[in-house]
Image (cartoon, rainbow, N blue to C red; front, side, top):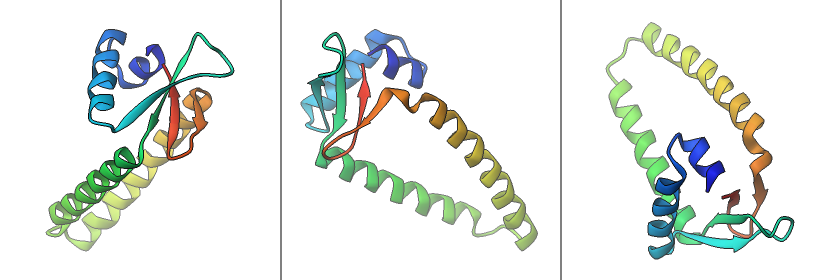
Length: 111
């Protein structure tokens, strides 16, 4: 749980509680890490991936609605800034992805 907690900037106990709740809702499953039996992997289920897609679509629609009143120059500037921000986020994600491994239905995260 320590890696999930670190990436989400929460304490490990909170990560454990959150994962337990997601598991009870069948959105994630826990699995033993065959490469390191001391670790546990957390993987999104099909239902978890579907919910993630729904949330992503809703956020995109909300962002489009919020930006609909911007002037063309403002839209261009916002796109430029968001592209730069996305590049920074991608670099940070790439630096931390050593804790991820491909799963059957989603990505796994070490606990």
